Length: 79
Image 1 (cartoon, one colour):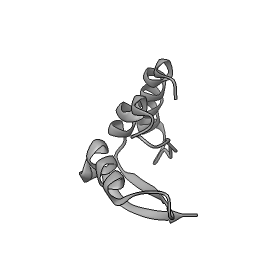
Image 2 (cartoon, helix red, strand yellow):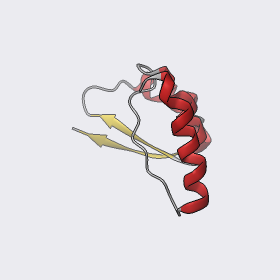
Image 3 (tube, helix red, strand yellow):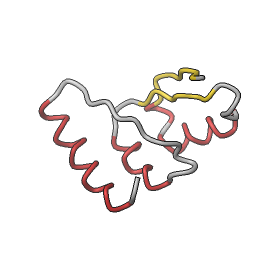
């Protein structure tokens, strides 16, 4: 996600809160795409998708720290 789209995405999140019961976003790995960090911090809850045999535990923990551990509601393992 290019940094030029971040303000637009933040706007959509704020607008969605007033219009919908929930908004679902899929973001790339924050360790590889730091420009997505403000978006990840703007949401109410995060479900981490962990790559089976690909994701490392320290990286998953660091990602949760970046997003705010209080927002992480769980994780799923994807193949």
